[in-house]
Length: 233
Image (tube, rainbow, N blue to C red):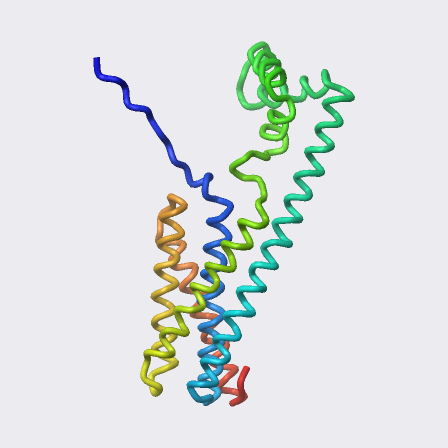
């Protein structure tokens, strides 16, 4: 008889940690750098000034994104560790109360009390802390905070996103600089929205509209400020 093929499933939750940071970083890189370029160009600055401003924005933004993600996700990781320490202490001090708490969680999810108790007993015997972390606290290997991974993903994706409008500046004719950067970056944002939706197994239309709308709004505001004040912003 032919051997049954193993069934392997891949879920978006497996990528949620780095995917969120990467999409946020790339989106911020495109929007902030393109907005900066459009604003500086609207202030009648020359191409060299635009490139300097955009390059400075890339470096500063990548460092800021990495630091911000690391601090933010580290705070989440610290909170998770504190919850796990509390849960570990409670398991040691009042194991029966914790077992009943786990049982009630499974009852609330639809198991009958007898079966829920059996499940709680077996999971407690195998890994009590792991069972409570997953089912009571909502902490698992797929969703636990990873500060370094998030920081690296944010910095790299921001740099890639920011490099795109800078490349347009170097390639576009000077007289069409603002228009070329704006149009190209809206296309980049639409592509990013699609890729983010694809990676997350979601429908693409809403993410595309969302990132394009806010990107266009940011560029319009900075272009208006640059034109209004006629100075580098």
